[in-house]
Structure formats: structure tokens, C-alpha cells
Length: 390
Image 1 (cartoon, helix red, strand yellow):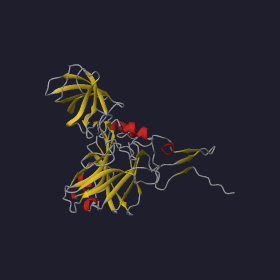
Image 2 (cartoon, rainbow, N blue to C red):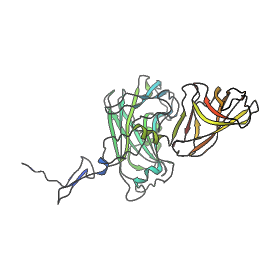
Image 3 (spheres, helix red, strand yellow):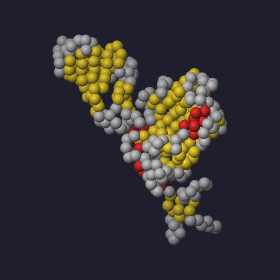
Image 4 (cartoon, rainbow, N blue to C red):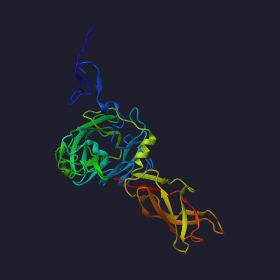
């Protein structure tokens, strides 16, 4: 029988051991990032949460939770939550080009990005001699092969950045990509609720963002470096599609298996940044209890308070289908001769990280001041969300 004696096992190209072996008793210690939960720092990496809806995201801003689209071009693309996914995953973010732009101006671009809250990055110890190495990995797929750009900005240190390139080698095939980034000993990440990292995937970019150099260590921000050498213009045909899932940011000098969380756990994390209170799906969906404040007509008003199930990152703003003809109704607890009061608009009066006071207003028969009741949707397009995004 042969015996293999080693002090450690280390992956090809790794700078530290994956498994260490005690020379006296032979016990093995597996590196913590391989066997502990809570390795994944980012949220919604498996694209399972889409509180704003699974389809129809055509404008700049957040689509699937924690992931935003951004562009400045003559083309257009739609974001959907897709069921096309690698083995072991159920969802992905899909980019579908709907208007082509075959010739990008120097300043034009299109990208997908996600952010990580600064206080959740304190474990990286950036700005100290103990700054941790991280690995970022993701699964990507497209019919459009070629070189794409990828970048990470460190927001609190003058947008210091690292920039990389990855290749989609086979059309319509899932490929996993990863980048290992040495910790920044000079760039402090503030312990606050602002954005610590901005992670971006380039879909198309003009020379203002592609004419620089790739930077694998943290360097001063330069726009020309962001997607240096990107050869793909995903917007050049309405036949083009691009998919993303399995995004993972972890403290490690090598890529590990994607860490899955339960749907409920991921949803609760997402609600710190966005909460859908009422969906645009029909009538008679309850928003809040409210009391009539001003029964004059026109301009009657009612007020109510909602309490958030999860404390939000900051005092939120309202989003959704807030205003339209007969969008809302205030149905009083005691009728007293008055029917349901139909009105048009919901506004935010004031908010904190845990509650919001809302005002309903419009031309309705307000009845008696102080009358209490419940506000419901009165139109399938009426909806309300709370956003406190990074």
C-alpha cells in the first residue's frame, strides 16, 4: 500500500492552502470559505427575487431585486426574469435587445450593475494591512460570443476600480467566470449605509469606456478603463440575448460553489432596499387603514400609516402606479349614508426606515372628518412600492 504524505493541499494558482494537515496527528483543517454558510456577501445572486414583476423592465433603474439596467445609446433592451438557467439554478436575469444600435458613439454604453452596502463590507478590512482577498464569480450565457468587460468600483475611495475582461466562447451555453481581487490596504470602505462596491457588466460601450487598460489591482478611477478592450456590442441586433445568474462575492482567493439561500431568506434581505406593498394586479387589494382629514370637495384627503415588515436602509420613496383616474377607494368602517369614496392619488407625507404616512387625495365625498376606513386598489394598474435603493 502506498502512502501520500503532504502538509497541505492548494489549488492551482492559489496563494493559500485549501486544506492544511497537522504533521503530528494527521488531522485536516478545511479552509473556512469552503465549509461555512454566509460566504456570499451579495444579495439575490441567483435572481430568484423580482418584487417589481418578472417582465417589462425597459427603463433605467432596478429590475430584478438588487440589479439595475443603465444605458445611454440609440438602442433599447428589456430585462426579464427568465427560467433559462444552469443546472441547479431556477432563474436568471435576461437581457433582450429590442432596438438595435449598430454604431456606438464614443460616449454611449449599456450595462447591468449591482451594489453592496458599505457596512456589509467591513469584514474585508480594507484600508488596513489585513485587507482580505475576494473572489467574484457568475454564470453568463449569450448567443453573441466574444470579449466582454467587467468592473468593480470602490465607491468610498474616489471610485477606485478594478477592471477585467471575460470571453463568452460558445454561443447559447452557460459558462462560469471568476475574478480574484487582492485586498486594498489603502482604500477604506466607510462603515455606513452608502454603497461600498458597484459591480458592473458591460453589454456595449463606446471608446470613452473601452480605450484604456485592464486593471487587476485597485487603481484610480478612469472611465476609459471600465470596459477596456470590450469587443462585443450586444445592441447590434435585435436577435441578441444575454443571461446572468449565480453572482457570488466571497472572501476567498479561489472560487467556491455558489451558496444558495432559501427564497424567504433572500426576500427578507431584498426588502431592506425595496418592498412591494400592493401589486398592480386587480381591484380590492388592501393598502392601509386611513381616516378622513379634509372632507371638502374638490380636494378631499385621507391619511394612514403603514409599518414595514423589514427595516429599510433609509427612509424610502414611493414607486409604482400611484396616480390615475379612480385608482383608489376609501371604504369606511361605518357607512353612515356614504358609499365608498373613490379618489385618484396616493402621496408620501413622511417616512422613516420603519413606517410611512401616506395621503390619499381626490374629488370624493369625504363624509365626516375623522371617519375611519380602509384604502383599497380600485384599478388593476394601481400599485405601491417602497424604495430605498443604493
